[in-house]
Structures are given as C-alpha cells and as structure tokens.
Amino acid sequence: MCGIVGYVGTKNSAEILVDGLRKLEYRGYDSAGIAVFENDEIKVCKAKGRLDDLEEKMSVEGVPQGVCGIGHTRWATHGEPSDINSHPHSSKTLSIVHNGIIENYIELKAKLIKKGYVFESQTDTEVVAKLLDYYYDGKPFETIKKVIGAVKGSYALGIIFKDFPNQLFAVRKDSPLIVGVGENENFIASDIPAILKYTNKYYLIDENEIVILTKDNVSILSLDQEAIEKELFTATWDIEAAEKCGYAHFMLKEIFEQPEAWNKTVSPRITDGFPNLDVDSLTDELLKGVEKIHIVACGTAMHAGMVGKNVIESMVRIPTDVCIASEFRYSNPILSKKDLVIIISQSGETADTLAALRLAKQNGVHTLAVVNVVGSSIAREADSVIYTWAGPEIAVASTKAYMVQLSVMYLFALKLALVKGTLSEDKVREYCGALLDIPQKMSDLLEKCEDIKYFSSRFQNAENLFFIGRGLDYALSLEASLKLKEISYIHSEAYAAGELKHGTISLITDNIPVIAIATQENLYEKTISNIKEVATRGAKVLLIVNEAFEVDESIAKYIFKIPTVDAVLMPVLTIIPLQLFAYYTSVLKGCDVDKPRNLAKSVTVE
Ligand code: M6R
Image (tube, rainbow, N blue to C red):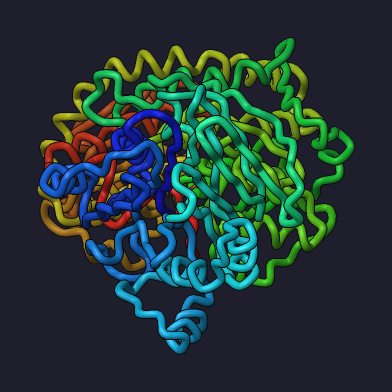
C-alpha cells in the first residue's frame, strides 16, 4: 500500500509529482522518491522519511528538471524504510514505481542473479525493474507483457524507459490505478486527489491493461495490443475536499464533515418517506429470500458492521454474523445460496476484504458491497454496490467513512424490514424521518464538544484505558477504542461491560481510566452496576450517557451527555465525542494525528 504518480506534459514534473505524492501520503509515508527525464537521462532522487525529507534532499542535490517523471510514497513491506529501499527502482534501461506485492520475487531474484544481475535493495520491486531490463528488446509494450506474465502478486506499476523520453507506461493488477487526462498533459495515479489540482477527468484502468501516455495522447491497450475504448469519468470531488481548508488536521475536518456526508448518503435514498436503495440487482425478491447475513470487513469498517448486526437483527430478526475479513477468508465459512454477504470498505481495495468477496462469489452467494471509493476493485467485483458519499477520507483514522457506513446499515435494515414485513410501514417511515433529522443533531452536538478537550487533558498520560458498554454501546466501544489506540498510542481495550468480571477486572486499579458508555435504556441499570464495580476498585470513570437518563452524578468523575434520539440511532451521535476524544488526546500527546506510526490508509497487503 503505497502511492504512485506519473506526469507527462510541459511543466516542471518534479513539482507536480511531489504535489501529487502529498495527496497520496495517506497511503504510506515512510519514504518517497521521484525519477524524472532530465536531458534524456533519468535522474532519480529518493529518501527515507516524509516528503519533506525528500524535498530537503532535492534542495541539496538539485531538483531534477524535466517534463516527464514518476513518483512514489512508500509503506514498507519488503525491506525496512531506507534510502536504498525507496522507490523508484532502476536498472540500466528504465525506472519504475510500484504499489503492491510481488509474491514470487525470491524465485525471480535467484534466476536474475544467475543471469548476472546485482541487487542493491531488499525490495520485491527491484526484481521487476531488473526483470523488465532482462526482457527489454527496445519494445516497451512487449517487454511489459512478458513481465506481467512472469510475476505473481499485485501491482500498479509506473515505468519510464530511457530510450523513450517523455513517455509514461503503466499497468495494474489488484492495485488501483487511474489515468488523469489534462490539456497538453496526462497523469497516472493511485487515487484521484493526486491529480485533482490539474484535471478532474480520468479513466479507471482495468486488470492487465497496458497504458502508454505522452503529453497529448493516451493509449490503453489490451494484451493483444488492441486499443481499448473506455469511459472518461469526471470526479465530482472539488479540490477543497482533498485539502485541510483551515482545519489543523484532516481528521478534525473529516469529523466536522460528518453531517454533510450523512446527508449526501442518506437523503437521496429516502423517497416519499421510505428507503430506496436504488440498486437494480438488489431486488425485493432477492431480499425476501435472504435467510442469513454475513458482514465481512476489517478495522473500522468491521466495527460499522458490528452496529449493523445489532440493527439488522433487531429490525429484521434474521441471523447476522460479523466476520473479520482476514479470518473469514481462511475459515472455510459455511455459506448457503440463501445467504447474503455484505462487504464494507472505505477504500474498496483492502486485500483481505477483496479476497473475502471473491470467496463469497465463488460459493455462489450474492455479495453486496458498501464502498466509498467509486470504481474500486470491491465496487467493481461485487454483485451489488451501495456507495457511501463521504468524499475523500484522507486521515488514516477513519471517521466520516464509519459514519456513512452506519447510515447504510440503517437504510439497508429498514429496506429489508419493509420487504420482509418485520416492521410496519409507519414504523419504517418514522425511522426514515429520524435518519433525515440526524445531520442537524450531529451539527448541534459538534458545537457542544468543547468539554471533550478537557477530558483528553485528564486522560492523556494514561498508559492503559478501558471502554465498557453493552449491546450497541459495546459495538461502539470497539470503534472508540480503535480510534484512541491508533492515533494516541494509548493501549486501550473495549469490553462488554458484563464480561469484565470474568478476568479483566483484575487490571482495574487506582486511577485506571474507564470510559463507560450508557445510551440504551434497557441496559442502563446493568451498565451502572458495572461502573460501580470498577469505580469501587479505584477507576477514574468518564460516563458518556444518554441525556434522557436520570444520572446519579456521584457515579463517575466526569460525565458527558448525548442528545437523545431513538435508541437504535444512538451510536451515530455517541461516536462523535469519542472520535474527538481520540483526536484531542493525540494532539495533546504531540502525535502525528493524520499519519500515525506504522499505518497506512489502504491495506492492500495481507
Ligand atoms: O478501506 P477499508 O475500509 O477496507 O479499510 C479497513 C481498515 O483498514 C480501516 O477501517 C482501518 O481500520 C481504519 N483506517 C482505522 O481508522
């Protein structure tokens, strides 16, 4: 999971490449590099660290001058982050950038060493650079074709050949790649934000299509060298969507964008008061026949699925599993033709989630993807797709994508309940009305979250922290805990409140912070008992509670009240202060909020 860009045009390519890489840094940020044609020679500059480190190096060594080049921002898999392991990788005849993993690189490397090639890095990518050189016979298309026939794994490759100045070559399999089309300039990129400043017109490249770009021509060829006619898409995101627009961090901006994201995702899907998913392949007949649902996803998307399970089971009363995609794919899952597999993914390119989707399809089960990135692999391969309209999510920690994933869970559950008759029409209409009211309630709550900063200041020095809750509050705690861990590096665990006393309560000692969530009336008293159990053992408790409940203020050191909505919708509002809690804690600790250590946004490796 790295970011690649390429430019051919009339402008200074180094500047455009670095600018594009900045928009892709969410995909990996442990090293970066560019290769540019300078006087018909390829000049490479690469450095361990952030893009700032690359820029600093270029300011010392000289910025490559030329109108065509490729660039890369890396999340290391094979070989530690270092100058040598950074991309681009080169051989005598060419330079390449690569996003993906070459699975048979050891075997290929051994063969190439026997042929006399010398390797300088520990990467799988350098093998592709040397293999391209080995097959190169002055014909780039044929050479690329031979190489993709020999490598196994995933790749989006940007290639420049010394003999073909001012031409860009690219190919992909299982890693994303778009071609941006401008005036007298063309681009390749892993994602749209990298090109948005220059053009909003783009092609989606399919598996093993070979792309050849000059400044005024785009050729997309099949392996038989036939020209492929493709639809030219127009990105609907504006440039601001991929900029911070005055916010200190993308994460904060994205938290504040949640009302709008919800509105964009939900309002077009409610017609005359009823849910209207508007997906032709998801017919009422198909939905009527569904007997079991499997929700499969990773990380935050999986947590959205946990809420979805609760909602679907309570509204529709059909069994719903939530599976971690990396477990599902190797668990020989029991699937039947009357099941529905719901795949949730922001990026639509998470390797384990994509593999789970393919497995479900092989088993003949209908697959429904809930995806944010239009045209991503998961969106293209699923039988049905419901897009979430969150716009680009840049911060590694997912917030607005989670929110819109929740919104689709509610819409889907309501549609299913309507089709199966498990909720009355009046009840469905009432819920739909409540869904439409949510953005205003979110905006009001966001304005009242000043206290959260204070709570963060009280908890920022904790080494361990627990979140507890029951039912929907437990599902929500999982996400609150993940947010805190990933960006503030505080170890935290989410526990079903009633389960604590079966072991984990031994970790509760003086001043251990516990964030207790209590928004569900039927579980309130039970959760209060669990809060008493931890408070008696010295825990410092922050209670996040439904404002409708009468609270004995002595129960917790700190209390934050959430505006009341229907019980089933409470997670939507409750997650907001918890996202902000993670955010402010990370800021106070001086962590890199948008680019937490060891992480990248799209996990395209197993
Ligand atoms: O793109 P996806 O939704 O498939 O990504 C799945 C997880 O990697 C992702 O949700 C991750 O857990 C979040 N970035 C955490 O905030």
